[in-house]
Amino acid sequence: MVGVEALLEPMLALHDRIRASVMDACARQASEQLATVAADDGEAGDTIYAIDRVSEEALVQGLAEPARKEPLCIVAEGLPDNALVLPRGAREDDCRWRLLIDPIDGTRGLMYQKRSAWILTGVAPNRGAGTRLRDIVLAVQTEIPLLKQHLSDQLWALRGTGMTARRFDRLAGTKTPLTLRPSRADTIAHGFATVVRFFPGARDVLAAIDDEIVETLVAPAPGKAACFEDQYASTGGELYELMAGHDRWIADLRPLVRKGGLCCHPYDLCTSLIAEEAGVILTDPAGAPVDAPFDVTSDVAWVGYANARLRTAIEPVLQGALGRRGLL
Image 1 (cartoon, rainbow, N blue to C red):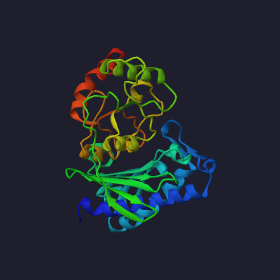
Image 2: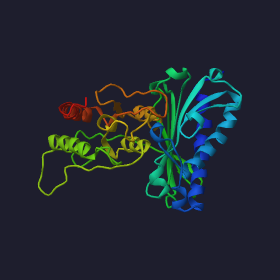
Image 3: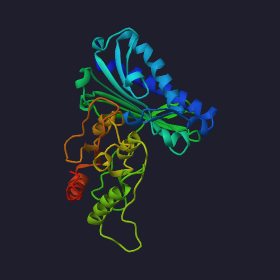
Image 4: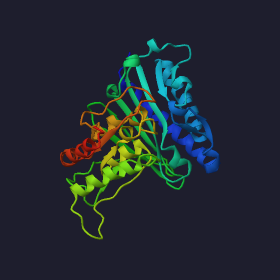
């Protein structure tokens, strides 16, 4: 029996396979075909589009080889009962590792060729139903770029060893080391700071919280923008923006303001380990380390700070805004 390090290369290869399969589908099919609804689990999960089926097939095929060496328990939306044990015939109790996977995070933007999506994978020791997000010890996330984009980034981390990143040039077929660094700014002024509200529902409340925080932290100047926002409909993409130094602060508060709405789920955050290893601070709205069950249905609220100084400045204002609305 070997350690989780042995799964790194198979996971990187799996991501490469999914990226290639999805990009091939995007090149061959029109956006309207990829955007066809393939399944809808109602309140139990997200809408599954035709493009998602492409990634799910590549996922199962790509995991077959590493599973022959050691059984794996896979938790992912789109699978029967959202879980699968490979190889076929193995039992969940036979598995040392439990994988939480989002084969495409950011489906909506990708299928209309608006913005990159991400493949997300977190690997944790198998503790059955008691496995948690914070049990993850290996995480990999890979960009699925737009067809007009020839570069895509891939990031990974083993707990306690820092983040590693590389950039893939699909025209040249080369992979080169990449350095990413979160912002060192101590203010949100003139930077990107976002309260997530990219789907209908409770946008008025979320926008009011956003306005209150910005107006408290940045002195108003007539005719000037205090800061900017980026409604990137991909949690993995949002984490990347924090790691890359593009965004200074992001708060996804949807579960607090609209119960039963379309919210972030644990599989959307299964690569949070990478962001933390890169220096990003991730918490729940109360300030505790972000955590959740190892599933695809639980609603998760989270806050990301590019550094500790930004957290010190923003967190009390955020919690005050939530407390006054009875949300904390």
